[in-house]
Structures are given as C-alpha cells and as structure tokens.
Length: 341
Image 1 (cartoon, helix red, strand yellow):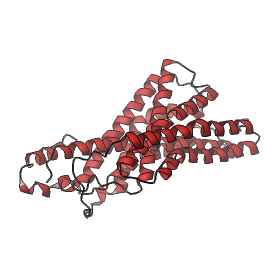
Image 2 (image 1 turned 180 degrees about the horizontal axis):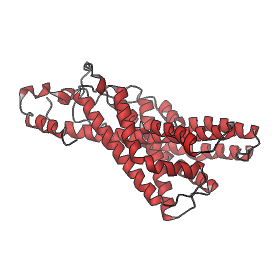
Image 3 (image 1 turned 60 degrees about the vertical axis):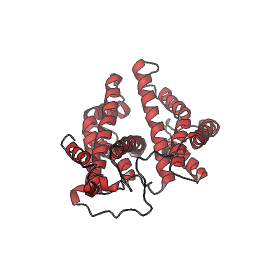
Image 4 (image 1 turned 135 degrees about the vertical axis):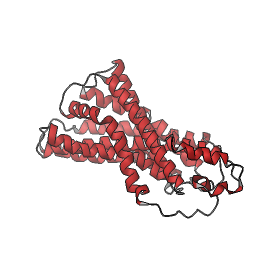
C-alpha cells in the first residue's frame, strides 16, 4: 500500500500540468461517480448490511458484558429477533437515503426489497428445515402457534419500522456527494490483464480476511455445532474488528487497482470483494464437517448446511457493505484532492 502511494504523490505533483489527465485513475474523474445499475437492489444490500452489522455488534457486546448467556439457544434466538426488528429502521433509513441520493424513484420496490432481501431467504431455508424436522419428529421443529406469532411480530414491528426508516431517509437525505461531475456518456473500459480480472480480485479479497480469522473460526464452529463452550467473547469481538479492518483495507486496495486500470465500474465489485470471505467460510464448513465433526444423516446435515449458508449469507451482506463504504470514502478522498476541469 505504501508503495502504491507513490502513484498518488505523482498525480498530486502533476495537478497543474495540462497532461495530468492522461494518467491512470485521474482520467476517470468524469465516470468514477456514475451510479451502478440495479440501484434499488444495491441500496437494499447496503441497508441490510448496516442492520446485520449492528446486530452482530450488539450481540457480541451483550455477550462480553454478560447480559445474557449466549449458550442458551432460546435466549440467543430471541435476542437476535428483537435486535433485528429494532434495527430495521436503520436498514430502511440507509437504503432509502442512498436510493434517494442516487435519484431513484421506485420507492415501493426499494422498500419491499429491503424488507425481504435477508429475511426472504432466511424464511425459505427455515421453512424447509422445519419441514424436515417435522418429518423426522425432531424437537427442533417449531409449533404452528410459534410460527404465527413470529409472522405477526414481523408484520407489526419489523416491516413498519423499515418503512418508517425509508420515509425518513427519503425526506432527510441530501444529494449524493461527488467531488467531480459525471459526464453523460460513459468512458470505454480498456481490457485488463488476467491478474487484474474479477476472478483473481475476488479470490484475493476473500482469502486474506479469511486467513485472519481461520483459527478463531474453528472455535466458533465447534461452539455452535459441537456444543462446546467458548468463553473468551472479548477475543471474538477483537477478531470481528480485525475482520472488518482487513476487509476494508483489501477492498480499498483492489478498488484502487481497478481505478488505476481505468475501470470505473467499482461499485458492485467493492460489494462482492468485501463479502468474498463468506464464500471461503462456507467452503471451510465442508472441511470442518469431514475433519472435526461426527454429524451424519439427512436431518443433521440439512440443518448444518442450511444454517451455515444463512450465516455466510449474513456475513456476505455485512462485509460487502463494509467494503463498499470503505471504498466510497477512499474514492471521494482521492478525487477531492485533485483538480478536474
């Protein structure tokens, strides 16, 4: 990163020169803030990502200070449901605010997508797993009355809070801050070498953060699926912070490489690179099942892969959001410091 900063210093020295616009990322000043396609989906991911991040932070904080016992499965699920509902207004505000700042007009579509982007797949996977549990006569199956209660709780609290947040975001969010103006016609993107391709960047973006949490990930899996105690939640909190910081740094670096290659389509790629480590976590779950677990049978395996997939989906949305906002801050800063005519 320090080595690449020499490029930035070079461009800063060339600000007053007429040909400075011919160098690297500075040539993209009229395209770098061009809004991405599928703005409604993009903003919904950001809203849900902030919401999930807050749920993670609150759950870890409550576990660290000893407010509740995280090994009581019923208490943990109840806390997650309550926190998810309470933070729904934040998801609506972030999604609606970003959508308004990007000039979106399909508000109903944006609100519905925000309310279903995460909870929709969760419901589908849970419905399948609950059906499997009923078929096997497992006590893990929820009774019909509890299902109706959860659905009513969602309709009465979660959905209205998301809608209220979206209305607030629409009414109180200003224009999107872009240091440079965007031209009408997009700039042509030159072909990139193979080592700067999307697949390579996606692999790097997922591998580096995953290696930072590899050791702790074993203890997380063993505590969830091996029913063993994992007491040092302070260490887990620190690992979460390290994961967020490494994800931000790697995503910013890859965004810089993308801009340096004169590719202005960084919006969606920053989300995918930020959340790439979730794919590595899900691949790791296969290793854990084979090497460190004794689970077998369709019931146990379906629960294992189903709930692990939901966990990785949540991590993907959360880290993708972190990666995007880190990249957005970086892009704004470097283009704020140059003069563009």
